[in-house]
Image (tube, rainbow, N blue to C red; front, side, top):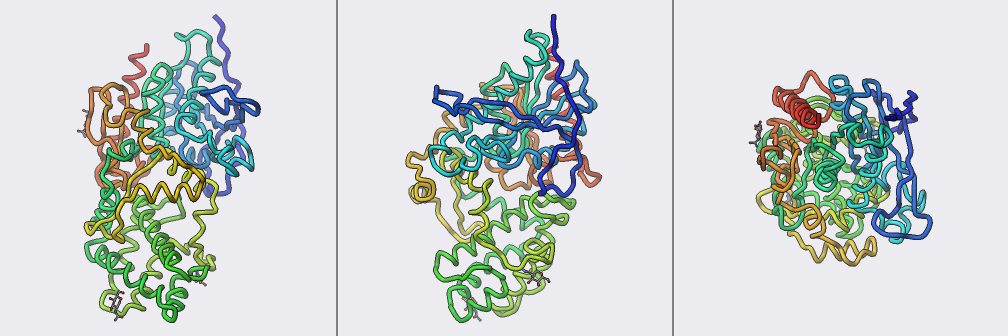
Length: 471
Ligand SMILES: *[C@@H]1O[C@H](CO)[C@@H](O)[C@H](O)[C@H]1NC(C)=O
Ligand SMILES: *[C@@H]1O[C@H](CO)[C@@H](O)[C@H](O)[C@H]1NC(C)=O
Ligand SMILES: *[C@@H]1O[C@H](CO)[C@@H](O)[C@H](O)[C@H]1NC(C)=O
């Protein structure tokens, strides 16, 4: 019986400048994958998909741990999936991080991947899952042609990548034995989650870590800022306080500023870890608390000084280097990762969102027609498919599936669109009190609370059971 071992050479891959701390060494590999897994197309019909490998603790009897990349550069995501490195020696596992097509270096048409719908149309969850399946199959057969001799595969993912990790187990159960899906909001689709729950959960986070007064000030702030920006004369002062790069000329511009502020508040909630992190920008522990502590001492003051204090309270986020000349509220539109992500949000990953008087944001209804119209204006997409993901992956009907652990921080923004109940005796939901998203997949940290430790132990025990079941 012949068995080909992967030739694993250790080199330090050239990592993206975004990573300030490179903790783990990874070897960069590329594999040619079909551009369209589901139909015959004319050339070019393949492209290079990037994946990263760490075999430091690998032993030939060990499993393969596959990480399904989500939105963004895989080398950044791998550095933040420390749990896999932490447990690699226990399992003698080979670690493989697979980049999602259209992100990082895995661009099917290189520089022109985003230039037209003709080039963008191969960006879908089904194609991305087929990529991972293709690479997984390739890796397994590289070890042995005989199925019984092939290594067992366990999949990990977080956030959107966690959704893919769960879906991979559902769609390709013969390839992967089980999935750890951390903070994977697989119910974030029309008909599965109410549109108001996301912003209400963010408001809960601010209430819990920043206090009710902070929530009230944020709530009051929108009108003050919008009114000030709308009046030309006062607008100038507000601009100098908020340090916006561009001119504010229309109500659309005002809306952009409010959206920009809202996104910052959402990001702070997402990054509300109990230790300093560098996921989005360098942030202190509990950034929500930090912001609210800066904001709330200034309550009974006039509108202009309110904006002054609000802006300065955000400095630790907007200007942590002290080198940011002004705030570019258009930034999001320029980033390729965001572009690809927004395309996905406009074609398959439709998540209804609305704000009501029960949250701290500007009241806004969910309007699917407007959403679809904006997507059409932006990308030229006409038949948005809001129900596709539910059709493809089963919506709430998880009872047909097996071997998936869904874990969530109980203070994470997406909790309300995640699996929060045990479904069967092998589809688990683990709730991690007093934490935000994806904590369990991050590297061990002395500041981790006991619930995080217990969750990681649960993952380890469950993976051991899956592996035992295979032998
Ligand atoms: C402050 O702004 C709010 C919201 O625009 C407005 O209702 C209020 O009258 C303003 N107060 C002063 C003192 O200008
Ligand atoms: C960032 O901080 C520097 C130094 O304090 C200041 O000159 C600059 O205006 C600030 N930029 C923004 C956008 O707040
Ligand atoms: C699901 O089951 C596991 C294992 O029994 C348990 O630890 C966990 O608390 C349960 N989750 C929920 C949401 O009840």
